[in-house]
Image 1 (tube, one colour):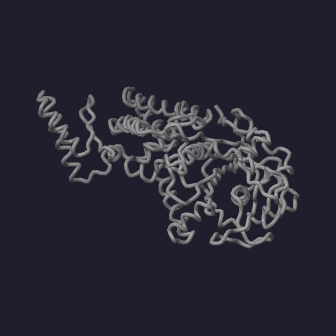
Image 2 (tube, helix red, strand yellow):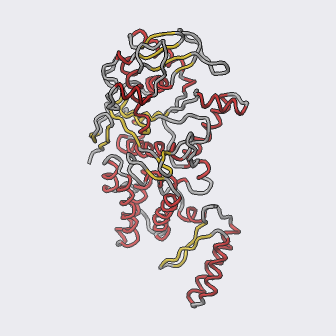
Image 3 (cartoon, helix red, strand yellow):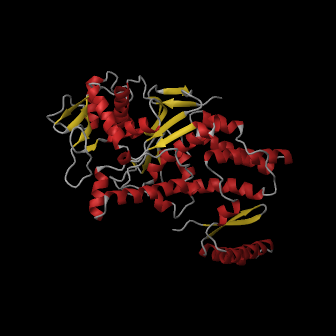
Length: 460
C-alpha cells in the first residue's frame, strides 16, 4: 500500500507523491517561545515526527528535509521579558532550549532546520518588498498590508466565505485598510519592543509573513507538505498561502496540507490563555517520555483527543506489555529489525497510529507464543516497527526499574523474592505485608506466570 495522506485543501485522502523523491520537503509551524510548552503543543511535534520518520524510511534519511520554525518575536514574548526584567533574547533562548529538551525526551527527532523569525528578517523584508512590487500589498501609515483582493483564491484552503473570514479573524478596523480582511505584513514597533529598519520605516513583521519567508529561505517554494494544528488553518495558513503564491507567482504553495486535532482538557481546547494546561516539562518529571508520546498518538491525529490522568496511565500500561514481552524474550535473537507489512500498511493509511499500535501488540503476542522461528521474526519486526514510531528505545530492565539506584534495586528485589516465597508457601499475611512494604517504597508489583516483576511508580 502506498502512503496516502488527508489533504485539508482537497478534503480527502490523496496518494502522496513528492515533487522530487530525492528531495522531500515538509514544514510544520513550531512554538512561540515565551513559556514552557503545554502537552497540547507537543501533539503536532510527535504526529509530524512519525511522518518524518516514515518519509525517511520510504525515501531515505538524506532525502527528507523537515523545517519546524520558532516564533521569537511576539507580544507575549515582549510581555514576559518585561515581567522578568530580562532581555528578550534571553527569554526566547531559555524557553527554546527547554522546548527542544522536552521534544527530545518525547522521542522527537531534531528537524533538519529550525529557523527563527528574528534570524530571517532580511528574507521577511525581501518578501514583503516583492509583494508590494507585485501589487499584492500596499504601504499605509507605517504599515504594510496584504491586499486580499489581489488573490482570487483567498479562502480556498479554509473553505470560508469572505464575510465569515472577516468575522472569524476578528480583524482590526483601521482607516488605512483598503479592505476589511487585509492583514498586516509590517507594523511600527511600540516603545520597548524589538525594532528593525525597513523601506517602510522602523518596525517588526506580522505573524503570517514570518512563516512564508522561513519556508522560502530553508526549503524553497512550493513545498510537499505543510503541517500544523487545526486552529492554524485560518487565518494563519490561509494567509501564508496567499502571501507565498503572490510573492513567487508559483501556482502552488504546498501540495499537501495536514492538520492535527486539538488536545482537549475537559471540554475545552488546552490553552495557556484559558489556564487549563498540563506542561510537558512537568509531566516529564513524573512519566517516561515514551508514555507521554504514546498517549499523544493513541487516537487518530486528525481527531480531537481528551487528555486526562487515565490516558497517560493506560499509555504506560500499554508500553509495559510491550517491554514485558521483550524482557521475557531476552534470549531470543531477532531477525533483521524491519517494520512488519501490517505496521507499514497502518501508517501508510493517513498515519493510522491506533492500527499501528494494534500491530505492535500482535507482534508481541507472536514473540511470546510462537515457534522459535516465529519468535525471532516477531522480535525483529516488533523492534523495527516500534523504532519507526519512536518506541521501545529503552532497555526493558531500565524501563521498569529506571530511577532506582543499586542499593534501592537490591532492597526491592529482595522484598519481591521474599514475597514470591511467601506466596508459594501460601503465607498470605506475610505476602500482603511485603507487598505493602513495596508499595510504601513506590514500587508496583506485577504478578505473572513466570513470577513477579516490578517497576517504580510515577511520583505523585
